[in-house]
Amino acid sequence: MRRTNIYLDEDQTASLDLLAKQEGVSRAELIRRFVDRALAGVDRTVSADVSAIESSFGALRDVEAPSRDPGEREQHLAEIWDHGR
Image 1 (cartoon, rainbow, N blue to C red):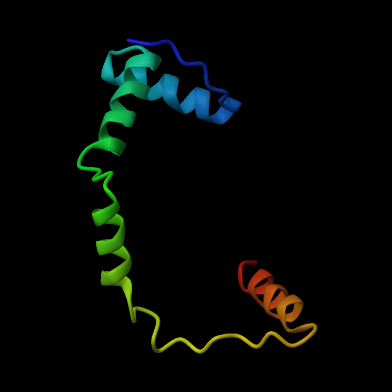
Image 2 (image 1 turned 90 degrees about the vertical axis):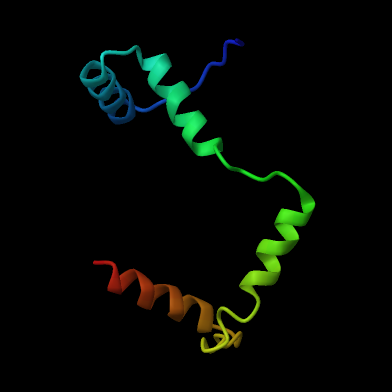
């Protein structure tokens, strides 16, 4: 096993500590379990990447591409921001 240091904010640390206590394991063990779950079944080959790209082809065919005229991007971002409020 290799030691790895990571930076977590206060909320992340508190949440991890609570989960670790509930599970009866250390914070480090909980993080190792999360990493194992995240990496389980990950296919790290170029053919898997190409397959994912090919299977996504046409996924957005019904989406109209936004205009790239001056000011359009800013207007679009402002609209998105307003919808999030």
